[in-house]
Image (cartoon, rainbow, N blue to C red):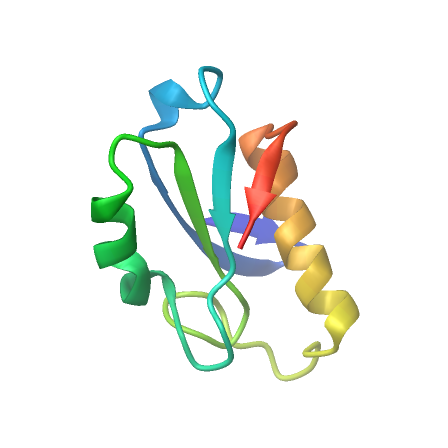
Length: 92
């Protein structure tokens, strides 16, 4: 979990040990999806450093009363990227 201004954002990460050996893949699930919906993709791309960020209001992430604008979602992604200290990545 990543704390973004009091909202806990669920982050799933595999193969962290490879993050400096290749470009990381960061997946942002769609409208009603969560990290769990991407398990098959993560398995097919093994071994690769992959991060799946479940945005607020979805899956295991917190569901605040307010704060669902594009700016808040971008803030969630930014908080997770900073927390994981990713410098280079491909965003999906």
